[in-house]
Image 1 (cartoon, one colour):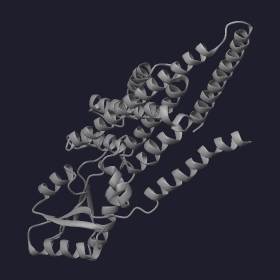
Image 2: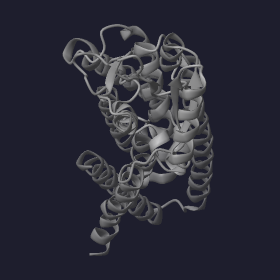
Image 3: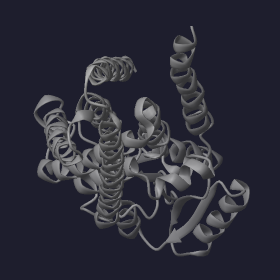
Image 4: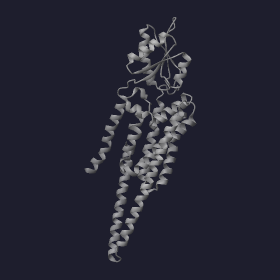
Length: 368
């Protein structure tokens, strides 16, 4: 019963963690300093921008831009997420958005300026200057690609750490690199020929996916040395609870609370999602920063593996020393035979126990 109750801790902690993470990140999306622009250089656009900023009470960061072309340029560089062109001389007001950057953000901006246009007694024309792929109209396919890559990566950690625990760390590290390559190729197949999420930039997307997956695997394989059967829970905290919620794939950080908005700046899921958007839709604007984020996570994973390698080597030396002392203390003769039998039995029991632990760990990971 104690054994069962200890194992039940993992799903119960996952229940608490997933509830806190997903509801905390997604339950009440509210704009915070969301950058938008009013187009025009006269007194009227400046007054409208000032009035919107005051009424928004911190929800919007409203600025003015001189003309429509400048507004489009800022949308394509993601400096703003909506640009309002006031109507005049019988022309309806127009809102410029870029749904490829975030469909939910574009929807939030549209709600704001629909009310502004209604107050002026005119219907609002919405123009999408950077639309998502026709086979991914909401632009959230990239987020679900992140989910697939993450599950393939962190679920493999349990196999490499459990079944592969008898292998030297250098072989586990090579297997992690190879597994991440396979995971990234599967991801590219999904993004391209299978679901047509993107119609160009597949080579760059493959590179982003491989670096992302390798970072997850290296961190997980290294942590397994210290966490053992709790590794699955640990990598789920890192690469599901905190990762998916801060990636910007559902809501951008401007619609989230400060905690998840802060994680978006340096978490690896955000690096993959924003890097892919930049590569595919925004002319690689800001791509270098997102690649740097992914590379730093890969470096972190390599460092964790190196520390784990050193710790395992130290443990092996201590075990070897203990075995030598035990052997020198044994007395030849009939007693030695009995001792050998006991040692063999205890060794077999240890192997059986470790095998059971590995099987339970992998079953638990696959079940999750």
